[in-house]
Image 1 (cartoon, rainbow, N blue to C red):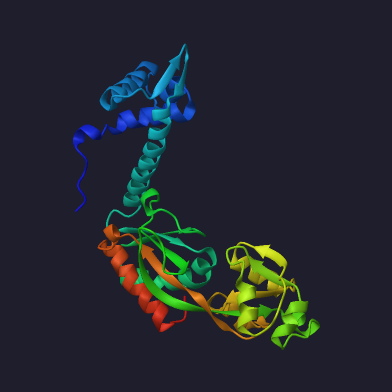
Image 2: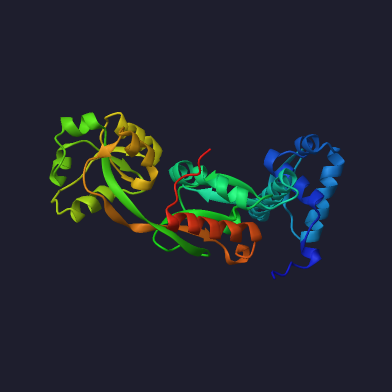
Amino acid sequence: MTMLPARRFLPSLSLLSAFEAAARTGSVTAAARELQLTQSAVSRQIRLLEEQLGADLFLRERQTIRLTLAGESYVRDIREALKRISSASLNLRANPEGGSLNIAVLPTFGTRWLAPRLASFLVASPGVTVNLVTRLQPFDFRLETIDAAIHFGMPHWPGAELTLLMKETVMPVCSPAFRERHGLGEPAALLAAPLLHMTTRPDAWENWLTANGVPFESVHGMLFDQFSIMAEAAASGLGAALIPTILIETELAAGTLVPAGAAIDNAGCYYLAFTQERADYRPLDAFRRWIVEQARAGLPPVAE
């Protein structure tokens, strides 16, 4: 169990709110208006906080205030703490009977793979509310109100536990007309065709070409920051895209995207990342067991 700091280091929420509002607005008067207090009340609360901390948080110059160096450092941490308290309260209000689970997901993985399957988790875990937010890069769990995250890459996330979900297979795809127009068949033929690239995977095409024994000097093309947009661009005939097959099952089945080369296994894998202190949180434990089963069984999306 994590020990809470001594109460003398835990200022009241009213003092912290007054300080944060004054720091953000740069004005005691504006802070008082926002908090629906008198100007003297806000000034008194800030003074009390400074006395409790034993440090000046503002430089007071006539009718203006300006954060001290100590105040600038302190307000960053306090603002994040107030944000976390607000988020926790909002989650509890939205779901007072069960637990809330905040999951950070990769955008296209969230929309194409996770979201269609979530219905089965919610049926199996009544009372649990799942909130999804998108993230493209690993982050510091200490600074985010997130219980877990879907991570792709190598098994490395400082400060987090990782549970392996599944490997990834990537395949070059394009529209049927594009494949015919560029005579795609042999791997080397792709070098003469426009290629689409993901900014988060700048060496993806190089790895594919190397795996298929195709010599090359450099590979260029349009850049995208999400697979969903790149898939639409490929289906529209803008180029060939190297995309994980689990993210384009619908397009492959419909024929709007067709193979433009052989599929290969990627070096990276999908993981569920979370901190050790949240590992025993019952909604997260249930989600972890569920998503591992879904990933390893390869179940299709739940039908409506």
